[in-house]
Image (cartoon, rainbow, N blue to C red; front, top):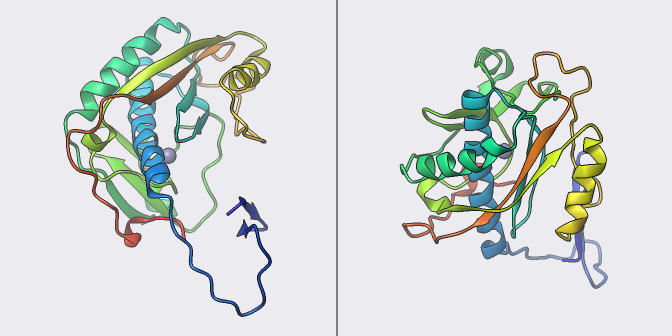
Length: 228
Ligand SMILES: [Zn+2]
């Protein structure tokens, strides 16, 4: 597999050698890579949940790779980001079962904070996939997660960055410095600052996985929302 991309709502896989129509192919998931991203993804949700509930900060961008998770928050004081990671690790250690289920759009919209990404409009789909970390976070989310927060292990800070007025450039600069090859970063920068704190600046945390999880990995069943 050389490249995977989305085009017109379809997922395209580019392979290294030519295929003929009707040929049968077998896809194999790179489980090690996927599992690291699942762990960082669930970890990022806990970070975002605490940033929102404790510091009133929203996520303004983010990126997950197998090597690191990058989370941008519109916090006023980047000093809180260190605390945030420490607190997230405390929550992750509580072995909370991650719930994945589906809700109709109108039901989902009744949940406060259902879309924590600053400036992102709620998805238009009629039925939403919900990822809940009971007691901490409920999100409309399409991504793969671990089943239990203990599987994440520990989040370790690689870097904390501060964004000033020129935040877009700073974020891109930060990505270059850590060697990200992401072509089109998903960044939603609040422009008007309505209901957002610290909209003129913000902070970015880069975290990697630290201590191995305290229990054996559990492979999720396909029904738990792995993309096809
Ligand atoms: Zn997510």
